[in-house]
Length: 325
Image (tube, rainbow, N blue to C red; front, side, top):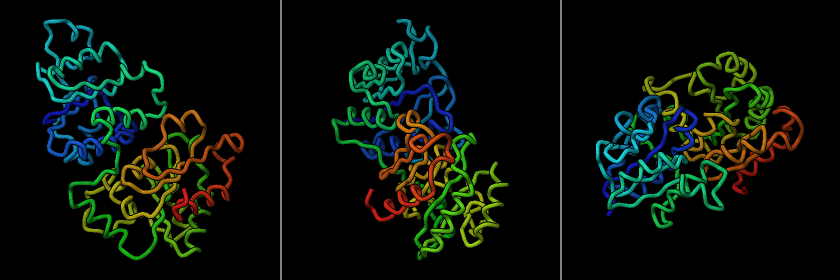
C-alpha cells in the first residue's frame, strides 16, 4: 500500500506549474490517502508561492532545501539526500540521470519511476502532458491518468458561482499572452465575442493584470460581454489570479486561449479548450492538458498569429461547443 509519495522535479515557474496541475490531480485521485511530498531540487516552485492555494489538498509538503540532488556532492555515498527519508513511491519527473540516481535513493524498499530512464527509451512522448501521463500510468500500473483539478477551498467556487450564475451558456475567451507574437489579434477575439453574443451565448473575457489597456478596448467594443476578473460583483475579493481563473473554468461550456498561462489555467479547470498556437513545435510540446482539446496552428495558414482566419477559429469553437471534437 502506498502511504508516502515523493515527486521529484527541478522546480517550477508559473508555466511549468500550470501545465502540471492535471498530473497532480490525477496523482491525488490515484493515491487519495497518501502523503504527497513535492521536491523542487533547485529550490524554487510556484507550488510554494502563487499556486500554493491551488494545490491545497493535493500536495501535503514542499521540499526546497537541504540535499535535493541539485549538487554533484549529493550523489556521494555518505550524503543523505532528503534528510535520509524514504518513500513508498518516488516519481522522478526530470530527465537528468545523475539527479535521478539521487532521487532513487529515496525509494529504498519502494517503487521508483524515472523520466530520466524513460526518456532514453524509444517512444518517449514529445508533449510535456503526455510525459507526465506516462509517468503516472507507470506508477499506477496503468490505472492513473491526469484529470481536471477540483479546488478544495469553498471560497473560489462560491466566487465563481456569484460571478457566473446559473442560466447562460458561458464561453471563455483569453486574448492575452506573455509574448505579443503568440497573441491572436485582439480585434478577432472581439469579433468572436460578438458572434457568441449574437448566438445567444455569453462571452466571458479573461485579461491579466498587465492587460488593462486591452481590457478597456474590449469593454468598449463589446459592453455586453463579461469580464469577471475586472468587474467584481462578488463577496470574495481576495480570491483572484490562477485560483479564480481555474474556478471560473468550471462554469464555462468551452473556451478559446492563446499559447499562454490562461489557457493552461482553463484546461486545469476542466473546460473544453480551443488552443491557438503559433507553430507546430510548441503546439506539440506544450499543448494544454485539457480533457477535450482542439488545436489550431497559425503556421498552417501563413506567417504570424494574424494568419489564423476568424472563420476557422469560429468553426472550431462551434465544434467544441457541440461536442464533436
